[in-house]
Length: 360
Ligand code: TRP
Image (tube, rainbow, N blue to C red; front, side):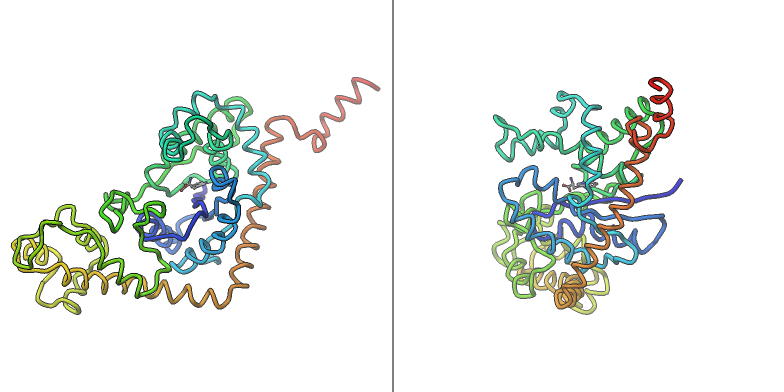
């Protein structure tokens, strides 16, 4: 079987370290390992509209920000096809057929959607388009025959729904779709990068994110304001490492050789943690180290972004060409779908013959 990878993001804002650790880094790795037949990254603007329908400008503005983020972390358009969801009409078409295969009560049970309905205050008036977005997401995946979908944990219910729809379609109309599976990030922190304020999740709406596009000054300011151990007041005080966000970030990013270069009085992260726990290491010292560590990760990303910003026409072309390729794939698959469903009336000579025989 061919391996086809597809994943996507809603363009509602710039991407941050949470996206980077939880997904983008892994996408670049997969891309460069090259063990697949096709890899797609979809900018899910139609899905973003399901809860931002009254603010299309936000989506429109962020389209280019998100592709700039992709390119700056190392997504290579020669290896990965980046496209825009709304411009592939077959996705809407397929969603409409898929809607027949799910019940309202099934949609209402989706735990991620349930949560989002609460967060958005939609309880008393759920936009229908929002409730059914998992069906459209199933179309995103199945139209491209993707079998591997790298996503965050919260997307597992969407994959479950997609598998159910694929199965149900295949049972009714004949084998047409593969059942996709999610590939979740490894490691606890990768699954949920905490915000700089110490809350469980880094997110734009909580205003606690470090963005990939943040400049050095902003990065410094954000790290210096990070949540540590509120009881670690004086340098001599023993500090708490557990739940200390600065250490959580170091766990993810710090490499041994960076101690040698930036903090030679400690051998490695374990050594630093020991000393911090015993007292005698100040937060500022640890934070300054974290700034250097993050800067090593983010400076090349920022640089690549600046280059692409200077060649913004090229970026636009990448998006346009990727979308054209996706449209072709979508057109071919929807033909297969309509044929399976027996609604390919004008491409089906057999049907014409039957009608002629009946009435001539
Ligand atoms: N729901 C995903 C998110 O919010 C975005 C998305 C849309 C997606 N369509 C997809 C992810 C298809 C994977 C596959 O992150």
